[in-house]
Amino acid sequence: MLKDVTLIHSMKKQLILYIALIFPTLLFSQETKFDSLVIKGIDEIYSLEFEQAEFTFEKLKTDYPKHPAGKFFSAMIIWWKVLLDLNNEQYDDLFYDKLEEVIDFCDDILDENENDPEALFFKGGAIGFRGRLRSIRKDWFDAAADGKEALPLVFKAYEIDSTNIDLKLGFGIYNYYAAAVPEKYPAVKPLMFFFPKGDKKKGIEYLENTAYNGKYTQIESRYFLMNLYFNFEQDYSESLKWAKLLHKEFPDNPVFHRFIGRIYIRLYGYPEASVIFKDIHKKCLRKKTGYNKRVEREALYYMGLFHFSEDNTDSSFSYFAKCDSVASKIEEDENGFVVNTALYLGMLNDQLNKRDKALFYYEKVLDYDEFRESHEKAERYLEKPYEK
Image 1 (cartoon, rainbow, N blue to C red):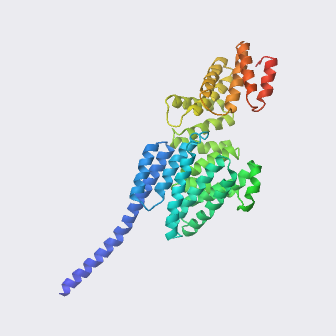
Image 2 (spheres, rainbow, N blue to C red):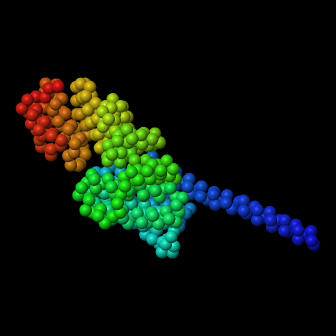
Image 3 (cartoon, one colour):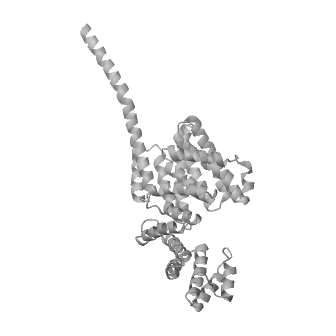
């Protein structure tokens, strides 16, 4: 009898030890499965593999029905469809609807537990992305209001779980843009009076931290750093560093691809830019996802500009003529590419001794709105032919 009791006691100890060993493994296995699905789906979004990403996040919703991540990242698929063509607003309403679903889903969780860190994180993220699109559409007041609403949610989530580095993406975005946007767009300054003060340096520090150490936010942080160094800091070498990292990981993403070409243009690296835009043009001809007519027009324009700078008149004319043809198929208001293409075609026709065609293009420039002294140049060349 005593022997049986001892045996049972020994078996119980072994079972407890087994559970103690295996339970964390099971938890780790579940967390690893969740993380692997999220990271797989995120990579598919940035690779523009939207159908695969939809499948991945539908699986995430099925396997983790009470977690907001599936709904949030499904909305990010639509976000990238917006980013691929910012002139086209066809996805705006769908994106707002998807974000509203995330916010409502998180609110239901927070009604039961107001301190749920995941619900706070994803609700803050959804509101933040809504603000991003509103800022792109120059809806500054609503964009600022979204920033003000999102930030406390992210702070609260961080108070609950300070080990979550991904939360610092929100701190970084707000701190940088709350300071930088009013500087670049003075009309926004009055709107920022009631909002927490930003700090550009601190914002960049947060973004660099998540760019290197984030679990889900590494790529998005790198995207922000590439963008802010290009558009706000004018530090093109630093922007190029991040653009190259992104392009290396996602070589068929035209947003990252074009950034490298644009940065080289700003650095007056026309030969390097020409190589990049030639590759972009090839992908446009192969009709790869995201390499649309606007991307093709830009690639042709910069290749024309490169050959113009090299005094290759025939090649430059060929690229600008193709650019003009592609531009004619895009329904939108005129912009710098359209105006300058007409101006260069006038100048090139003058070089080719085709004065009548040159005059046609100079008149065309005058029909467009002024873009960086375009009217002054066109009027000058109407009076006297362009010469090198």
